[in-house]
Image 1 (cartoon, helix red, strand yellow):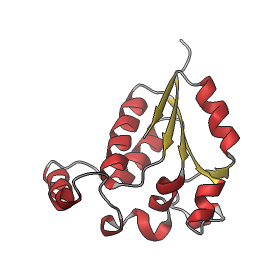
Image 2 (cartoon, one colour):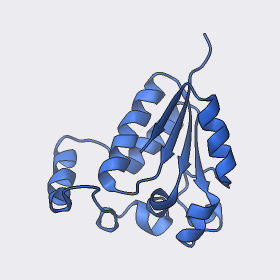
Image 3 (spheres, helix red, strand yellow):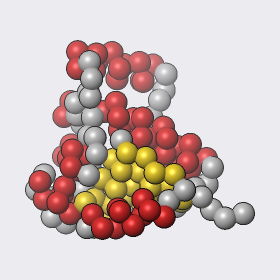
Length: 141
């Protein structure tokens, strides 16, 4: 059986959408899918070294006043952080995380080393377009 491919465009850098992407990624890893994640614009900020592990620096996409409740609920349920979801998925299956070159520059990220250790490379938008065209599943978050 051929390995299914997922292309995930991660535009959002909000903690709720990053967590949702992590849950989806976890499911893809459980199904042993090949996953390419393209981190775009706001998403690139979340992957910066000085931002990723600091939930205070990440916004909520909606209901901003519920951020604390959201984070506390996740902790009570022992749900991994969004970053831990991504790390675990990379350990379980073929997951590549690509930061869009323009998105990186917007947030002063010019080198892979400017981002957390799970980022594989910095690429042009054409790679995302090609991956999306070839994927069995394409999601935009």
